[in-house]
Length: 199
Image 1 (cartoon, rainbow, N blue to C red):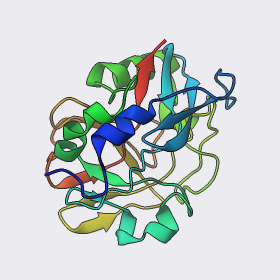
Image 2 (image 1 turned 30 degrees about the horizontal axis):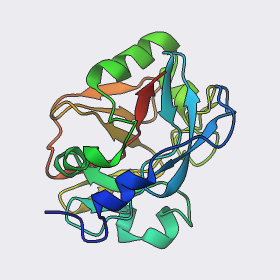
Image 3 (image 1 turned 135 degrees about the horizontal axis):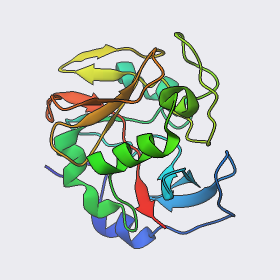
C-alpha cells in the first residue's frame, strides 16, 4: 500500500544535490532527499553515509515516530527520524535517487574500517543514557530506540539500523560494538534507516 502523503513521481523529480563541501570528521555535505536536507560524510570505509536518520513523515502502517510522538522525535524535535519496518522501507527504494539502503556487507565494511570501539566512535556525543560516544567521524548515531509489534523501547539507550538484506540489522547499545542481528521480523520490528552511496 502506497503511503498516503507520498507521491513517488514528485519526490523522485526533486532529485538529490549537494549544497556544500564534503568530508569526514563532522564537516559534511548537505543533500536533498525526498524534499528534506540531510547531511552526509565520507566514512572510513570510503563510502558516503547520511548522518541523520531518515524521516519521511509517512502516515501508513510500518512507520512511526517513537512513542507516536512526532513533535518530540521528528524533524522539529530531537530529529531521531521515523522508525520503519523493513518490508515498508524496501518498497520505497525508488524514492532515493542516487542513494540506497545499506547492505549487510556495507555495515561489515564500515566495522572493519573503523576496527576498534566502533559504537563508541559512531555514537553521538549527547543523549545516550548508558554512555555517550565521541562521534569521531560525524556519523552521529543517536539513541532513537526501536519498536516491536506495538511496543516502543530503548529510547536513550539503543539504536538499530535496517539493512537491505532480509531480517538483518545492526544495533548500538551500551557496549562499544556495532552488533549484527539476523533474526529481526521485517514486518513487526521498526528500526531506523541511514542511506549510503558509493563515491
